[in-house]
Length: 324
Ligand code: ADP
Image (cartoon, rainbow, N blue to C red):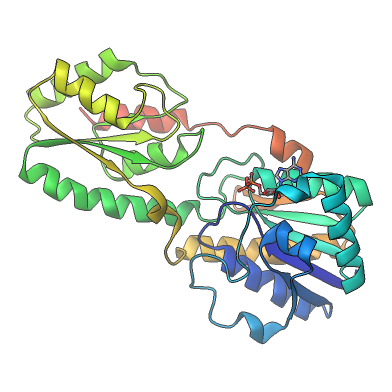
């Protein structure tokens, strides 16, 4: 392998820039060329390439977002689109790539690797932590810190007015963000898709909380949770059946994806980038780099995209105990 392409694809997450920097510098260190591909698969199909050297990634380790931009690209789902991408890579002399993205981006990479026998390596970049084969995805830790900080602020106003807040956080179909920020911010209740509390238990819990002398309550709701239709329906339900609270809703939205990466995410990105490049140089392909027990591990992409992450049940118990 003489020239590696690197790109970010799908939803962005903090730490992607740190991963790009790591891939580029690991290539320079190992005396191979590195090319940045803009806007993910879209840029691959359009030939939007830029040679990268060690200095082209100066001052980005601390930046949120991605300097290579990200995109969703329907054309890459077609054989013609992928052939065009392959021809462009060959023309540029790129003989392997590192994709930083989520499930969808990995599915595309896996199909591409199989179709053209092309070496690819994946780095899991998403705040949702919903990828099998790694304990932590890039951006997850930063998102947890961002959300906890916001909930702390909401708590200040909630306790000043005896309010009940439903706070919806991201996480797609999994409750990792909700469960962790819920414990970290001391929420009264945490609603996650993995555990169906049911509306009655929610009401009981809120009643108990009020009776125990608490003046305000925070309920963290994962976006994928199905206890209520959505947070606004939850508000209506509680207002109707438990009129002791002044209920408010806050949907945190895309701010959760932004901001400077935490130190943990920068270190993780740095390790993953080096591991991905060195794995390609060793002849590995069609794998994703992950972290487990603080060690870098590799999982076939085909497994990573099929597998499911599991929620930490011990943490659910801890939360139940501490909200007494
Ligand atoms: P994420 O990587 O964050 O999960 P998406 O699901 O939007 O984001 O996927 C990003 C891109 O990966 C898509 O826009 C598409 O170009 C490519 N991709 C996703 N699924 C496939 C597929 N089945 N075949 C080929 N390419 C795919």
